[in-house]
Length: 398
Image 1 (cartoon, rainbow, N blue to C red):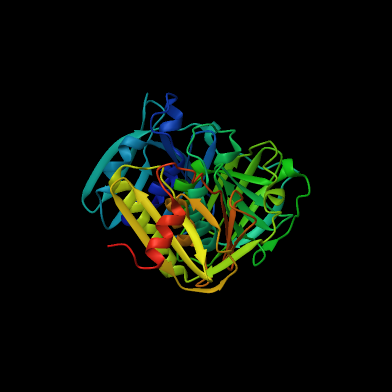
Image 2 (cartoon, one colour; image 1 turned 135 degrees about the horizontal axis):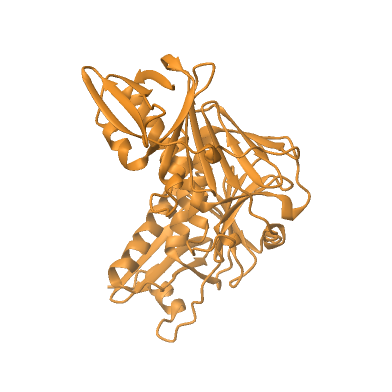
């Protein structure tokens, strides 16, 4: 019968990771259980699933082992989580028992909990069409998904491409968009093994997977992570974990065509200064309750300015730029929160920003990240932006 001994803290950490893919509200009892297995080599595997995601973690940091597999109800895991020091789990089920039993020994304490088993809840096997698509650093992938998650939609529709991270191996970038902006990070510095020409066949990972990635991966680890795909599943595999996700079929948006734009104007601001101003404007708008008012950018004599009026509040800023080709009669409005989000992740102290005109998107270029943001309408009969900027630039505001 299955048996192993290990550190209780390490076991708790493994169980928390394995539970990342479990839906505790599932009506099928087998899906509210965590499964543990000791293989012939003494490797402990812990996994859980909701039948859309399968998360497995592994360790060889066990001893006094005996092979076997069993299931533990997620509500019983809290019993283990309260223990410390060395802990031994042993399957003590006998044939005459209607319900199996697990003895948990920690020091002189022995606790008995129910034992379950269901051989249908193993991780699915990849088929003969499996291909290794790419290899990336663990911390790089986690950071990318967390940062680009801002650019996915929170509308609860599993087949909505706006909820998807698209791993575009042809254009060598990861893409995410929500209908108002696009977030991208280049794959140029990662290892790509299989270039996908068919847009229906790109690796697409749903944003519901982000909380699972946060639990499975270490933001400080530079270990290599492999990403695989077959006809049914995507597999993300590290040294001590495997995460399998059902594939999302369908064609992703044609992002290349959205990026086909000229640089009729461009400016290069100081990232920190611009970010601080946009944060302030976004907070000002929130305080006022006027959630839809834009921040307007304007240039005069080569200088870049911004202005926002939110209810009874107003804010005006002048920015340092190392380059600015905006014309003096040019005005363009944006959601200040969208600009805050973009400058939060853009990885350059002097990001190149350019666009085609007052109604065209702004493309913000960092070293690896690129963000495209749509402008918003600034036609408002109550605000004469030309007059407001002129007064402030000339210092005529009391």
